[in-house]
Length: 402
Ligand code: SAH
Image (cartoon, rainbow, N blue to C red):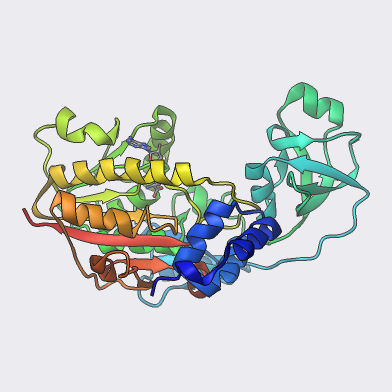
């Protein structure tokens, strides 16, 4: 059912002010979720109760890896069906101690601190009067607390050097297992990835020996997973427009030990022109999106115009995917956002303008897409932060019919 009229302007405004989400974002959430809007916003401000990683099945067995993590005192658990998805509990929100001083952090840094990261000098926005050894509360620009710790640099040092550890976190708001420093991560046995993102590669259902194109590949979460599912056989062409990200992705591919991945730095919107002979069995589109579903977030200022521009941008990938996929081939489209513009409206575009037929999938873990926007969205799945304990996400699968 269409929920637009359920929430009045005043209600939208008061939610916007209370939770520091732009009125446009609140409107989009309310359009989809109606009277669940406040719950959705609250959920987006937290990381959820579980943290998900993906096991690299080319290098290890998920049960073995899970036991290894449990031996280290972590409470790791495999998903009952998708066993390479392993969950670890998140603790929090934890109370923060009273601290005599405050230090300000930018959005990215404050949201990292919220999840247990230290604060580094480039992320500091306000450090007036801070001395080394001070006990400080780390806040975002609105004064929302992200964590507390001990200053390891003074105001002068932070402003002069602009790099290095500014505050060592002693009290996070949420305690999420930090796996990047572990041997398992360094050896490429695990990769942090949200559960819906793991589901997306299963919806694609890559087969060994096929030619698969990942149109927006960096940092390579799905690329790695798809390579795994192909058992190293066939060709996975991973495209990203950003040169630096391709360089990082190249490192990841090496660390994880994938041999059938070809990285290309390109604007994927012109693949059909630049590679006229390219014909893929399957294509995955994971385009830039408004990322409203990404959590935890302290605030979200996304504007209507950005959402509309992104929706248009995403359509350009869909159009090209439909051109480079073989007849009867598969296209999967996924976003980590909740807006209908970037999800169901674009699914309709794929169907009506690009000859892509929405198709059901056996990997259904979310709720159905919104049929009141586009009937074919019933085959798509949405992950809702309030009920699925995951980021907000949408995944759709299509078959090229003509
Ligand atoms: N699929 C990735 C996440 C993709 S995020 C994962 O699972 O890890 C979106 C990516 O699209 C970004 O890395 C961005 O650099 C890339 N991108 C944006 N515009 C692009 C374009 N025109 N062509 C190719 N890549 C693009």
